Amino acid sequence: MTELTDSYLADADRLSALLASAADADWSAPSPCEGWSAADVVDHVVDTQRSFLAERDADLGPRPSGTPEEVWAAHTDAVRRAVADDAFVTREYDGYFGRTTVADTLARFYGFDLLVHHWDIARALGRDVQWDDAEMDRIETALDGFGDQLYGEGICQPALDVPDDAPRQVRLLARMGRAA
Image 1 (cartoon, rainbow, N blue to C red):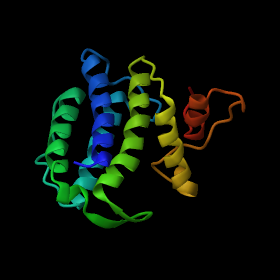
Image 2 (image 1 turned 60 degrees about the vertical axis):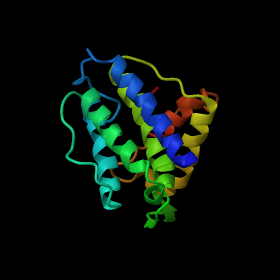
Image 3 (image 1 turned 135 degrees about the vertical axis):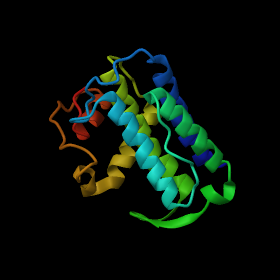
Image 4 (image 1 turned 90 degrees about the vertical axis):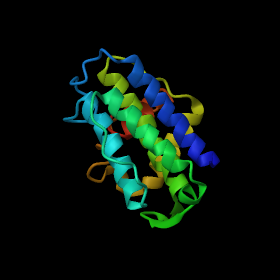
């Protein structure tokens, strides 16, 4: 596997730990994603990753069902099998922002997605997530890379106003239309 694949899997493992620790949670609780419950956020993460990987000819089998934790666990097991193939993860394709690889997209875009939605799910479940500096660097780089597309449909809500001296995580969340 590549360093990029390892980065994606580490992010996936952190989400797995959150979901496993929330087995008795109220998965219908509203998330910071407008109109979505905690379970809806998990479904979104699974479905977008499955769609991306299927478009690259990965065979992940049928979509898992069950509790959000069970769906995520089965999904990540299937993804682990797919990304164990170095030829698959190093495959190049023309992405939205230019030529890239499966591993790069998993690490950079889906890694960003996992970090942010980890926070969303935690908030829905009444928990708090504190990003470290490296995670905030990755989020900020991803946000910068989106350019004007950041506020396109289905990506982020319009930015919220926060004081310039607010903590970095609060500023990043506000940039994504999320109230800390």
